[in-house]
Amino acid sequence: MVVVAVSTKSTGTWRPFLLRPFRRLRCCQTSFSFSSTASSAKVSSYLDEDCGEFLPWLERKAGTEISSVLRIGKSACGRFESWECRALYTSKSVQAGDCLLRVPYKVQLAPDNLPSEIFSLLRDEVSNITMVAVLLLYEQKLNQKSEWALYVSSLPRPSEMHNTIFWSDDELEMIRQSSVYEETIKQRNVIEKEFLAIKPILDRFPKHFQDVTLKDFRHAYALVTSRAWESTRGVSMIPFADFLNHDGRSESYVLSDEGKQVSEVIADRDHGPGDQVQIRYGKFSNGTLLLDFGFTEPYNIYDQVQVELNIPHDDNLREMKSELLHRYRAPVIKDVSDPGPVKNFFTIKEVKSVSANRKGRGIPQSFRAFARVLCSKSPQELKDLVMEAEQNDGRLARRPLENRSREMEAHQLMLSKITQLIKEYDASIKYPGKPPISCCITKKCALRMQMARDLLDGELRVLKSASAWLKYYCASLVEG
Image 1 (cartoon, rainbow, N blue to C red):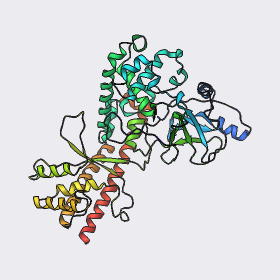
Image 2 (cartoon, one colour):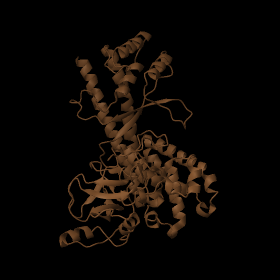
Image 3 (tube, rainbow, N blue to C red):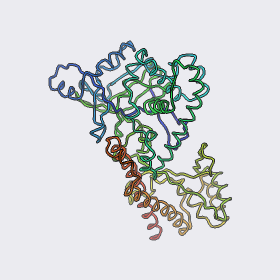
Image 4 (spheres, helix red, strand yellow):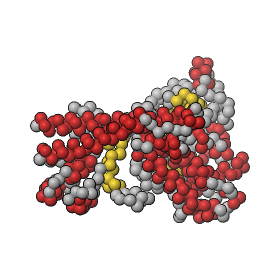
């Protein structure tokens, strides 16, 4: 049994991407009986009869049992008590290692569920994500005639989703300091490009796609990127399993068993009756969670920040440095949708225990190497770096410079860059972009303001940890 994941998204975004389920916003409940009165009371406090047919319907469709221990309920999403979402709860005691649910591939929505005449036109033109989005639009148009009507109607509406692609321009101003701002703009552009690519095909089937707009497609696309998983069938949406909420501390995942053609979840801990079961979508920062899933965590241990560092245009050795960095594969990111100059981004993670962490784990070696190259003052210094790389592991400037003053200068350069970012983040948090007055009175706007704060607070925490370590390292160079 293996976990299958998508390596990258077709959007060209900055982070590794794994398709994971979306955090639910609307409540769906069911009711049932238990032998234990106490246990029944505990579970029933979360459940209702509104969607009591969902699991029985899915099991009839699958021709097999999906889960004997889980039921659909409602939960406050994290600390947002006013924001209810779907969740899965245990109906009886569960032990670590037990199988919690098993969903056959045949009751998952994948590109091959599309009518053949539509599938054949799309498969060579667009991504699997877009094809599943088209499938959702197709099934929505069928309404109650759809064999997936119970599932499709349970999916969150656009107003219930908080992925940043749904934020207003004013709301996005709250996170302008974060790279998530630019990534949101890029993702919107990708979605629009995909829609323009499929529009001529959709127009050939007016019965099924009449009046479908970019807004409709954006909603369907976001449902897929935030809920779907990968298997040999391609990108698949997994009914029932996608009711599982995220817990960054969980060791449970949705697993794909290609031999048995099922997706399943194994309990990572013991659960009592009425306990909510959660999984970990991935080791994702708040930036990824907010962009792709529409929520944040108040203290996310996986938070990270992108820091940009480039060779100054007035550097006399600019051409030589650029050639060496390119030859030795510096982490240059070129956005294919941006015709502007190439930019160098480095991902900083939180540095734990400054004094004990002598290697500065969290500050990438590639960032430090880039700074060392930038601080070189002569062609001979650059040649010395090349010679050292070829004599060792082939990586340029990955070892501390023998010239302590130059090593100090390189790390002070990084510290200066991070210090400036800290000031900008502080200002952004203190004086955030303000959403419209009409929005401020809504629960939705309050949620997004808190998410923006979580994002910026986490990234600022990472920057401050890097700053503290760089100061410590520079002091150690002075002490000798």
